[in-house]
Image 1 (cartoon, helix red, strand yellow):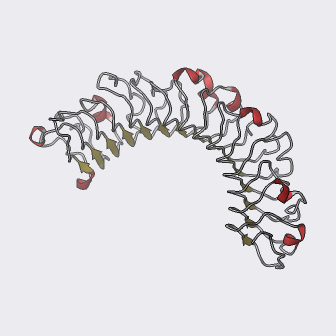
Image 2 (cartoon, rainbow, N blue to C red; image 1 turned 90 degrees about the vertical axis):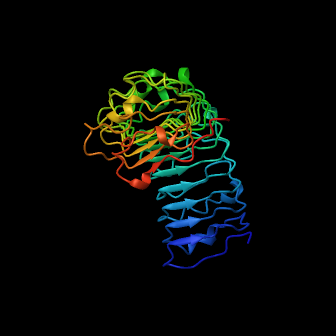
Image 3 (cartoon, helix red, strand yellow; image 1 turned 180 degrees about the vertical axis):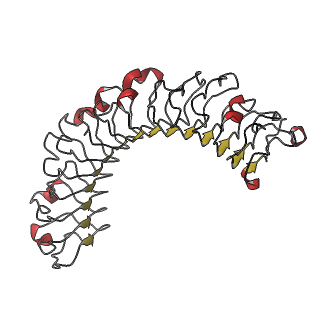
Length: 366
């Protein structure tokens, strides 16, 4: 099917025309669907010319529009009722000053897998989107975060770009931001402005995995609940790096880094002992279980597999004074442990008998 046929239905609220070869949308095609709320035109042959006749402006009740996997380079004319717009995997090259002028009710915008970059996005492009909550710009060509982001944003996803630097200005007004995903970029220690996190007082979920960090970012948002730092080059956790986060941080992912026993200081996790529920330290270079582990009061998941741990000290995981344990999962496989060297009550506080994983271990001869 290369053309959108004429439809006539007062009852229809959803139309799925995905996975066709549609390249033309005549205005008359949609006039007979005045109550349409959801329209899927993904995986077709639509380009900028397909929307030349403003064929969707009459859909005054349209809430969701899916234009994924087409040939679109610019935002087409859209009905003001729209709340969710998907234009992923197209050929979007620019966001102009007035491209969103007619969609002031937009709540969610997905522009993943395009060719957008910071200079191709006008500083005023997002200005009309005063209600926008969720913006997804993954897999584009951004080296920096775009400026002019709506202050209403709660979710910003920009993974798999070319981001080298994170500065204050683009996020200055994003005081409601809860989720920030900057994974799979080129961010290093010196490229993050120290004061950037002080503006993000609502941030709860921060993903900086698959970057080039060598240490824990300092002055992280106080009420952060989840911090993902896996697949970096982190060699050091400074003392008191989390001290200001006494009631918030629940999940900390540090897998696939370069942490050694010496790089985890005695006071590295101060501030998280009562809040942390999940600690992932697998695939590092630890030779011992960090001494701080037994101090966590509400830890549920501990992952230490694929390290170089040779022994489990008597109270390394479970301390007799730490009553009411919540620890349900401990992974220590693929280390250098010998079963006979493990103290009998080393894991007495693990609440799930199937949650303790000790085998297989590495072959010490290799």
